[in-house]
Image (tube, rainbow, N blue to C red; front, top):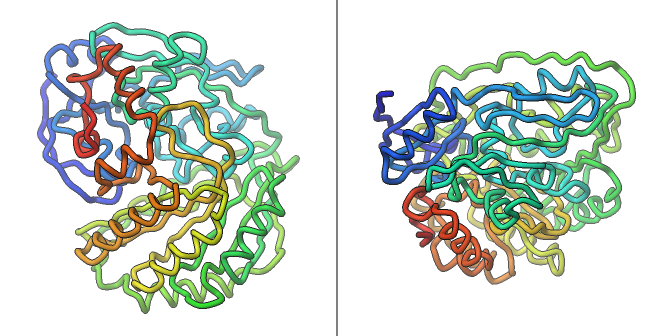
Length: 437
């Protein structure tokens, strides 16, 4: 297999890196490539935002995309790491099964979902993706292929789920799906006039399986954080027929100047006032979970320089007051994005580098500019001081001292990597920036 040199980046387009890209055709080919390269990193669809999937040598999992087993009676599914969530849905929804946890795009591989320990709109009731993984087949730095689970090599399992691909190459995963009766969702919209009202609405609808809020991060004063909250449940009828359309493709990058304070403020005004308070309706399952998947290259809206998605979580104690302080800082800067998503998190899990802790999480997009990069460093300082942390799957700028203070299990993680031969074999641009071996 011939290595090709490409310029790679995360979904945000920042930062970029020259890399040798290997695309093994089989699991055995992965082993041989590991032996030929001093250090590499497995890479799926490149839908993480920063540099966590950037490396000088990447092992593209495009051809590791086979279904291995699916029990339509129990919902137990085993697939290779390169299988996309989108492809799983094509097979399982019509049989009455759905992903237990899913991020905001279906263009994510199983390997990426495990490595990032992704979360969704139901973290408060279902936890992260890794909590529904029954077992993982992993290629270690020693060349050995092992199976790991919560009961088999549990230290390796809890380091791999959320471990950003740094413990080995995820080859296969077995996950437990959840039963559904319909390919539709019962959705309810709640408009709130402030951040405090939005968080109160989250608490009021704690029993809802899914909840997420679009939040206006540009408005100031009493209306700071006004939101459109959406809660949902799987519908009981309307059938299991699933229509998956190809996304619309943006042919060119949008000039960066199009997204400015005026246009973003106008978008936020229209979006907020267009929403109908307490409106309930039945919506297809894909638009509910993946609204942006309809536009295949929506990242081009931010121009060629790219953007940084910044997602942080704050502990529930004083979470609302602290979130207001962060939002005030963003609103004052005038750099807030038109896409800002607020969610509630339940309790943390055992995975060593998993992102969620109990509290509130906010994700925002910032165009790449010197001013915005400086702002994000200041936000890091605020988040650290408030006992929060930044999501590794979206990080592009975090400093080593911030990472090691906010992810206190990093030393245990490194010990597991050393134990299983990962150090010196698997690394990313992010891991080197964060001071991991």
